[in-house]
Amino acid sequence: MKQSKKILICGGGIAGPACAWWLNKYGFSVVVVEKHAAFRDGGQNIDVKGVGQQVIDLMGLTEQVDAHNTHECGQKWLDEAGKALAVFPKGAFGSLTSDFEILRGDFARVLFDATRSTCEYRFGTSVRSIEEREDGVRATFVDGSAEEFELMICADGLNSSTRDLVLAEETRLRYLGAYMAFFDIPRRPEDDFWACSFNGVGGTMAHLRPGGPTQTTVLITFPVNERDLYGPSAKFPRNMLHAALEGRGTLADRIAGELDGVDDFYFGPMSQVQASAWSKGRVVLLGDAAHCPTPFTGKGTALALIGAYVLAGEIKHGSTHTTAFQRYESILRPYVERSQQELSPGLVRLMHVKTRFGISVVRIAQRFFGSALIQALLKPSAATSARKIDKDFALPVY
Image (tube, rainbow, N blue to C red; front, side, top):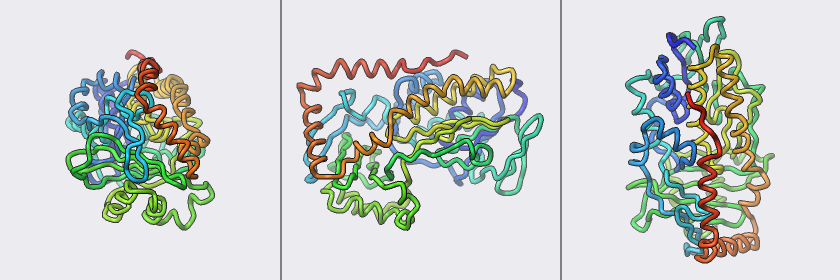
């Protein structure tokens, strides 16, 4: 496509700036709008595996990303008293820890710093309406101003407001049966570089992970019936979290004790975005706005990076935007759908066992798979899985 006009990207998180980097490399003029008033640091731990790492390498950002590594050693499963039941070092079979462990805000900062001098960022604004024209798209912003762009990319996340302007009927949120919350609490002297996890009665599951010199990050998930998603209790997230943590042991007590002092936290249903189409006219979806897999798959960041690379490459080489968008979707959708299928409501229920008996069975399995003998036997399998992740999607060459 011609490279004389501007492209608008809505969303200044990960997918948007990553795509901006590639589009700028290909000679396009890019404007990124972000609804928050300033760049947002913080956020949960994310890992970048396999092909996502390849994209980082191609961008020349490996050193910058690794400089923000949380250096997580692995994962410990704890009982109610805080005693370790099983230990899964980084790279071991069953461990959630990868080589690239970084806070979402730190990773977003790397991408922002890599694009801030070559792309125009506008904070504190968002698109209110869109008017499709023959040679472009006219975006009207919340302040009433309007501007024309050649293309518009919606990369503003799971609950994308810009997606709803053009593809609301084509999109559904698939609820997986649990709520999730993530936030930071103060780091304590006893906190080390291990992720600490526990299962609690009623289905509560929580993970505390290294987040930096002063903070520890928290992820809590717990089952909620779909009929209760928009009930009265959903309006009081702290109350729901306190109820999910009460009586679940020392780690839960620590989180509950810090909860009321938390200023900034995410709370919402664990859902996947499933869109029957990723584009309409000159508007296209990217990242979580197109296909959020949920954090439990561990693939959201990689999918955002891969999608940004493919979309920008197809825009560069496509004879028209229609051709570019169609090829982008045909290349990426099969991989996205496989990734989403890795997590189902049934699997989420299985992960959030509710009864003491169920938890005791889970802990037996944790001890078994965490034992030195079984880990030694499964080491080749872990290595095979790692190699498979590296090869589960073939990046096109642009």
